[in-house]
Length: 299
Image 1 (cartoon, helix red, strand yellow):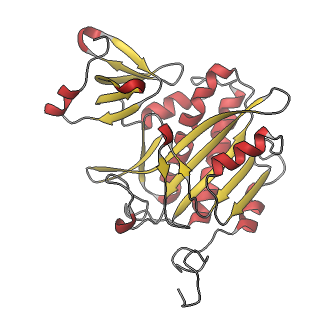
Image 2 (tube, one colour; image 1 turned 135 degrees about the vertical axis):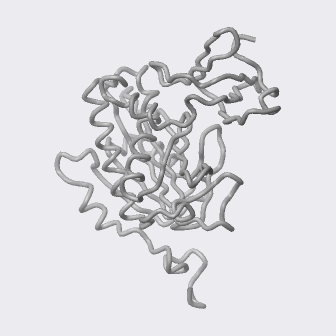
Image 3 (tube, helix red, strand yellow; image 1 turned 180 degrees about the vertical axis):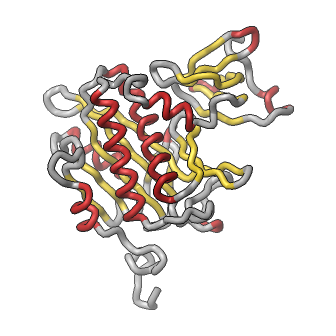
């Protein structure tokens, strides 16, 4: 950084160069591709908010990709904020217009998780796994740290047609002192062999295109498309004791045993009672007194 560089200059941190938008467009926006446009902006509040607003006004079509070098009001699930230094990760949203039945759209954030995890594992050589419903974790030894997540939002477009804005956020080069909360991590801290954001973005978008194409061809069927099998094989929530914090501050305690046809997490509690959870915060439990804080499904 030179004395004349403002704090948010593209070259204020030489280890974090800006994305090459022209090169990314050449690689991803092509005939027969899902991706119809790709825009990189220096800074915005939230790429999901911006792309959703365009869709509502009828100014966006399926396959548009909006990427920000920095988000000032990024959002996660349950209205949580998502913040990170400029150019330290990937902050992007894509617009999809599924033709599958609407009751199968709940698989889209899980599909995005599968696509992201497989792209990072293949490209960065990191041990990337998923936490239900849409957290992306990286494992290093016995430790699991969250490096990203997915946010899916349905939007209504002019003429009565609906679409989905799918947001993906990933920590690529976040340093230990920059981590926003305990339990967060980054590809760099996990020793990934690749943290170049152009390479990672190409890999993630190509993987989303591949998995969305399978899902769309199967008319949204999670079984026929292979999405359910891929998700359950990479989801470290399954087989664990968990506490589900539900809307209204209710809590359920049980073992995560399956993901049902709607993409919900199925918890098995006492006496064989099973209950699906469609929304909520999932806490992975370790054996011990902490389990006593929850309640079993059906209680």
